[in-house]
Length: 439
Image (spheres, one colour):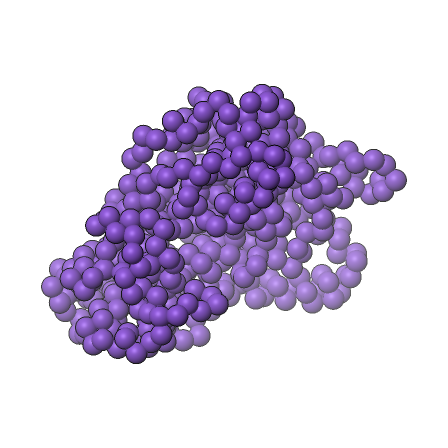
């Protein structure tokens, strides 16, 4: 397709003009982009490699590990808390000493959920129910299901809207037997952004603590954990924070709550006197009481690189561009793709949306594969877990995550144009709809 708007009302030239005025345009050169013809719209799953990360990793490997050997532990040993402080200030809106980097999101979720649920039950034996949503990210549901069995509690799954933030059923679910509520701030299945402060306040009125999963929001939308009253949160660093595949995750525990909770995993990095190896376990009094074993030293510097990139760009500037990019997806989808059988499966209001957009289609799996292999557009596919705008739950969704640090407006325009051409030509029908190992 040429640069005309083709009935969309937005030309490619208009998209290019937005890029020319983009205050974040300079950041694109700070990421490794080996093939500019490929349009990468999967930053909500795995962020691109920052140029600085490769150099920082070489320093850690060659100079620290290679040169100093075990002597480098004198600087490594406090890295989980120090990098946590960087993340707290740059991304999460938390105070020093409230964020710890290490382990995976799954492990951190287990630690905080177990600690909070146990504490709630000890304070009030009636509280023996863990609550999350039916459409929450699978690992969150799985962890809570296993934890409920281990603690002899009950897991209660509730249905909350995935496209509209308005909801009047959550309060009814917060009954006196609830020990913990676990929610995603931005839903992976739709991009819906929940009101962190309002939900936290509502749960608090019912005596319930909320454990937030920030994996799809940190680095994409503004966060103010301190100001919102949030007490517990976890999240990954390999999406919008660009820390790399399998990068260490983080956990957040509000300062006032830390002495009241005890991690279920007792390790030597959470011991108050770590090298008093002949003493019984006595947990640290600060955020390190939620540590466990030896931290992933090679991954920690990459988390810091990603967090400092976010800080330099400014989260408000990033969020504004993210809203513009995702709004462009919605606009072009309405004009070009709705007539071809697509339905928006994300909020229309950018204030209720995170950094990605889900487009539903009955043949979404085949279309996603064709996009990657034929059109050189990289999104990802997810099974449909909630209704689209038409109320349908058939098929699946194509997720488009234009990370604002390195994605341009013309990238979005070109990707949507390629998707439209793919559908009009019928080339997607040549591809298998069978699910692969990785989607």
